[in-house]
Image 1 (cartoon, helix red, strand yellow):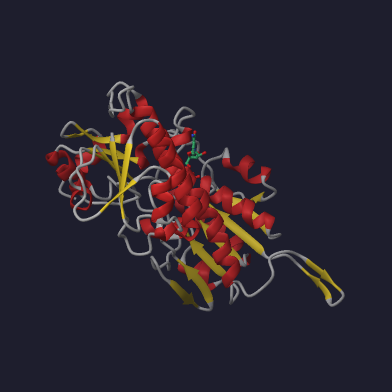
Image 2 (cartoon, rainbow, N blue to C red):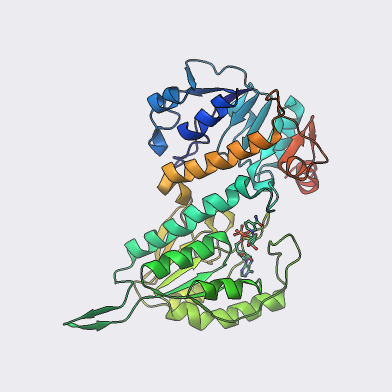
Length: 371
Ligand code: NAD
């Protein structure tokens, strides 16, 4: 098929959906890959590296594609003309755009909706990008914190390690814990899922306690009750107040992020402490977070970055590109044509728009509700 690489336009987005290494694999598999000039520059891939990998650069209007590969989110206008698109489409956040894809007959594959199963692990872009985000969040916090992270035993005295707290121990949170441990911080963690306690401890951090609830939505957390929320805040207050660094990563797919750090907790932190809120794009886990900004709240630095995977754009793109290529390999038939079998778990999961219809119930309800 003819695969067109999209040049991302979202401010701060440096990633590219396909990198030269995987372009070579696609070309070797018989696909044609085309790209506009400068497609990979943000991630440090020159046009020459794409042509050397067998891709063809186009000028002027984009040729009609069988599939446009993008990071996203994107609109129909961004990617037309094409028969299909694969990206982080944010279908629950942009249901009206999904209706437009459906009306235009464009098959829309959402990287967010790939099932989190062992079979689909190589396509799991939420995990690969969360790995980058968890790592980068720690470096941002360490850069802002005006103290050492590890314990220092010097002739001028012993300096204790910085204390870090990670809230939400999914893919990003566990990566943040590992990175903080590598830098020598004393780390504690918390997650609503009971099984996360063991994972936190296996990385050399302590589980702070607080309420846990068995989750039944495919490993994801659901929204918690008001009683649980109150119990969480009561349990976390002293741990937040004592931490030099708090990294929050708690998310509930398709919903606003849960508040785990209140304004009062931030006010009780030591001056110069740092909060990095990875859930900023969905409202934030910290009450005072401002998405995309770094603010000073009573002397505490609160950061709500929206571009974390872009800060390691080359490697984030490399991982994303492998995820997208694994999906293309899986869905393409022997003639290289995209086949979206409604009985196949992966195809059915990610094809949010197939043959002119929104297939995902929640997205369809949101689109029909006009939200
Ligand atoms: P996510 O980004 O949706 O959420 C991050 C973390 O926040 C999760 O661990 C979640 O439990 C936690 N959280 C949500 N609400 C919370 C609250 N109120 N209080 C405290 N913590 C809260 O999650 P993710 O990192 O994408 O991973 C979600 C799950 O999927 C995990 O169980 C993970 O192990 C699993 N997973 C499975 C696979 C696979 O099988 N291939 C791959 C990746 C992730």
